[in-house]
Image 1 (cartoon, rainbow, N blue to C red):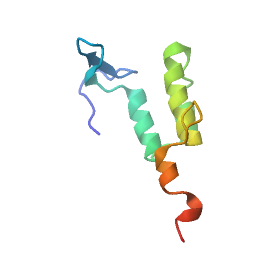
Image 2 (image 1 turned 60 degrees about the vertical axis):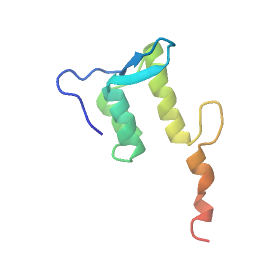
Image 3 (image 1 turned 30 degrees about the vertical axis):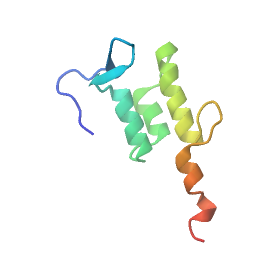
Image 4 (image 1 turned 90 degrees about the vertical axis):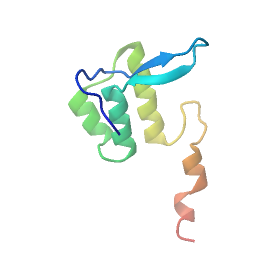
Length: 94
C-alpha cells in the first residue's frame, strides 16, 4: 500500500469519467488506510476509535458501515462475505 506525499486527506479522492464511473484514485485518505490496516489485523477497531475518534456525520456513515461489515463479516444488507463462505472455521481442519 503506497501513501501520497504531502497532505493526507481524511477521505479518499476519486476522479470520475464522463459517465460518472470511477476513473482513478487521485489520493488515498487516511480512513481508507485505517480500513486496510484493520482488514490485515494490524490495528483493532478499539484502537481506531481511541486514536482517531468517532467518524461522525453523513460521510462518517460510510466508514462506520465498512467497520460494521468488517466486524460482522457480512455486508450491511445481511449478505455474507464471499471469503467467509469459501472457508468456514469448522471446515478448516477436516
